[in-house]
Image (cartoon, rainbow, N blue to C red):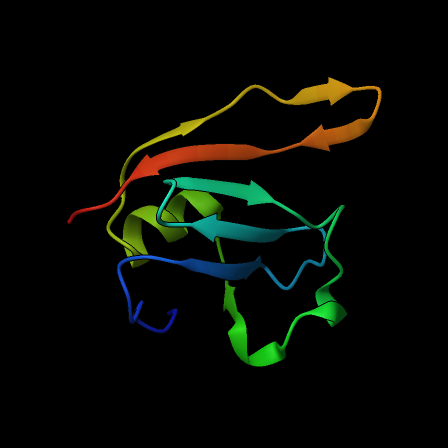
Length: 93
């Protein structure tokens, strides 16, 4: 189980299933989560700010952070940018 979110706003990082290719940045202010593993190296972050979770990003947002209306966006494949996974969500204020 993940530690409880201390604040309703801000950013946190979640590593899913101990897989370095599943590092997600969650921005609660914008209601958006992005897989940043292709752009941000795990070892560049302070280990204390990374939450480790076994499961999917959808499960984490819904079960651990009580988010709702989670919608995954189509994968983008642009010349300047490799594949990107992202989703949007709503929080309870």
